[in-house]
Length: 242
Image (cartoon, rainbow, N blue to C red; front, side, top):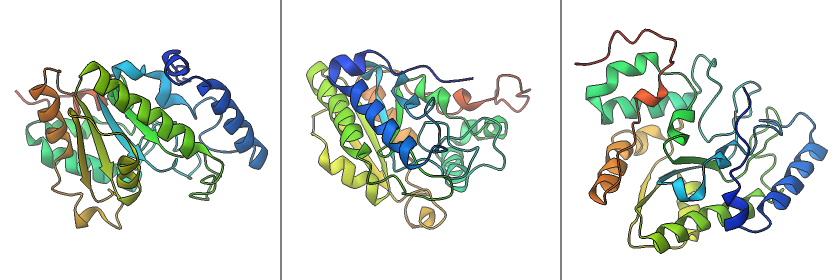
């Protein structure tokens, strides 16, 4: 199933958004007609309205393995197994952070769309990649568009006096966070990247999910349902805790 198109409010909040995105998709296709995650999915993160965003997870670029990337940072297609290694580490930390719900993760898929539906913007700063070549589209110009979009989200948070959480996993994400405006209700939660190369150096034990919810609920918003939203609706969740 293809994702929803970008929400029209992105164009309203960031005039020229649609034109710029199409030009970048054209450039990606010209460089590599088989670019990932494909034209129909590259903008999937923008299906959520800017005003609905309450948490941002900042990624770098899509998974370069064919069949994995689906347009959301760190997410993969529902059927992907085993999980990409970074995503497996994210779930490991999620289980440790929210131990009461950890048994449910046995029924989780690789698809993080359930987070997006709750206002969690899973945005790579570069939205396309050549198959098998990480970082191959890093010079196409995506970063200017995506950082402009993130700035729009932060500015709206400041204007509307609404809480916002930025989850910054790794140096790249933290540099992006440094480039964004600041605001009194913007909470930056930084740690190492969940990659196997760095997860043990500060991602594990960082408790990003509970800390994000603490900030949201302290300022009047509902917490993100980090676990149940990942479950396969067709699976039997007999391990659900009482």
